[in-house]
Image (cartoon, rainbow, N blue to C red; front, side, top):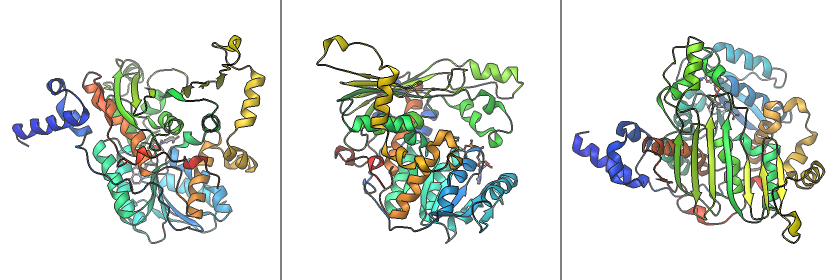
Length: 464
Ligand SMILES: NC(=O)c1ccc[n+]([C@@H]2O[C@H](COP(=O)([O-])OP(=O)(O)OC[C@H]3O[C@@H](n4cnc5c(N)ncnc54)[C@H](O)[C@@H]3O)[C@@H](O)[C@H]2O)c1
């Protein structure tokens, strides 16, 4: 692209992002250009979409590393109950396939086909007539290309998080889903955690009054794993931290929060601003361990703020560089109640009794009584399934897989749409763009074709 055209393109970009043109010269244009896309028309036609019922869902899994292995285990109960069958497994590493087959043989008689011949062999799995649903648990850069190719082969897609990390890819996913009429969801397990579902159930039953603010995070010390040469295949994860700066892991916080705030179902994110602290901790750990990854672009703490069309605000944090104890914060504030996580605490306003006003969490007994009253029906329903099948992240991975497969069995809309996965993931490139532009506000694109304006119930509140 010649200089004149390049500047014109960046000018269009700045307008789209809602940034003043004067700031553009200060940005690292090449980096910014890689993150964004000119706005595109999308139809919103996958809202409420359901396919014909599939009695037994034939599943292919791409990526059987740390996460893929767990996803496979979460299917064992469904396999034993004739709801699902594994028909194909793909990974670059033979040892991962061997381990997966060994685990599976105790739960399924028929051995699945395997695809381990290099980087593109997964395409043969995607093409296989046998497959209904492709589960993608590979490094981030593969999620969008695998999802798009899979849909083009007529397969439903459930991808690990994030489903995309450029806006261009966000639009490509939506367009392909709308054109092919295939489900394309991001499997965000934290939406299915006991605590998040308890909070959501209280919100839906009016305990919180009108919501005004929420806070979420992914705070998880990943230094050891990122610096270990064998933990993530090819150390793919630290490479993102080497080159990029922003909030890379938005969805564990934003999935549940977006459900609380009815995003895509009556409200939408409209504007975002993001700030990263300086980087210190990961590079210091790298030096201490003689790692070659000593230059890190991503700040230790990223804080992103969002505002919705209906005036609610969200604070979202990201820190995987420091030793801060694990937290997704999980705070939500309404006119009548407040919840904060880590550990879970609840405040209930009693406007009729003035003396109760003011900053006291419920005591243990009162909290437990609320917990019993408002535990999500889904958690109650799956209580009887043996804990042996629910080893993923304290049970939430199983609940998520159960919902995905049984929704497909019954031919009803899934709990998430392609729009949800894209909206929760798009916070990453938008945060990066804001960080590059000195934390200036960035407009949040409407990925739903305007369908967010219509209030509709959350699928996750529906019993199956
Ligand atoms: N939802 C969660 O709680 C959760 C937890 C961990 C990881 N994840 C997500 O899961 C994904 C995988 O993370 P991980 O920790 O398992 O990483 P990993 O490196 O352990 O596993 C990735 C696997 O993908 C395989 N792979 C890479 N390229 C491939 C290709 N072209 N074809 C076939 N296989 C290929 C690798 O060989 C490897 O086994 C990431 O997107 C991560 O964000 C989600």
